[in-house]
Length: 101
Image (tube, rainbow, N blue to C red; front, side, top):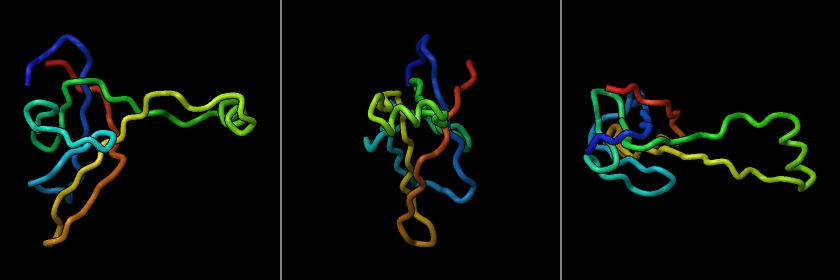
């Protein structure tokens, strides 16, 4: 995966997740080496992933009355892996900025 000057994101793998695994961002299968790297128990993405935080009172109120919607970027990271011989899914994993090397 080529290093670039823009921000990167990372996701810590839950302890029970083992390889082989498939990584999806917003429902799109990601390719290891191109879209992300597995470093120990951490997935490092070559781009910034954003997750919408909690909505405040005024934001909820404006949505309720149809004044505004939620148009913020909200990337969702999902994993598909095998656990005890069965297919398992871990959804909505928390992303955070990856430290620069």
